[in-house]
Length: 196
Image 1 (cartoon, rainbow, N blue to C red):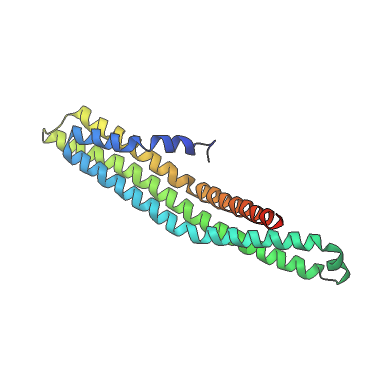
Image 2: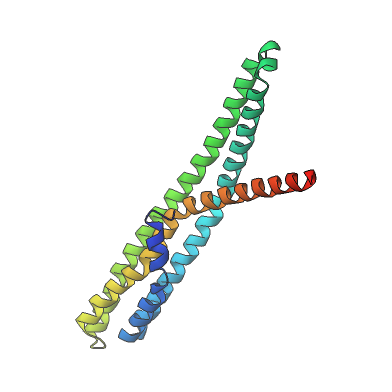
């Protein structure tokens, strides 16, 4: 997340309101259109979070439980082998692993759909602002340069939102991994205090 293109999107995001403000200076109608476009993409980003969060959390929880089960089974491998439980453990591991993969695939499919939809909306909005700008040029309310500048600024203003939505799954996975590390560290700290 930090080393990829996500960091660039996070640094570009604060510029979005500035670009929209400049579009307002070009013409208020163009500014309101740009503001509405940005709000629509933000709403789509929130919807993406809502649609992806539950299956991704389920996949992570199932995978963590499965890894813990596998670790416990390996620790007790002699007992498992002696009792003839290997086939049952393999079936359980496979079932849980497939369920985790299914939930992860659901989250990925939803995220891909939302990313594609947001990209389509951004490109459509860039075309529509050109149309609105052309109308304003015909009505002699702005210049052709303002029309093209508004389209360019809108694209630059909305692109970070689109990129962040595309990276949202990675951000959620990183946040979940950080929470697991914190739980592990907190658990180790509690164990250490109990020995003192």
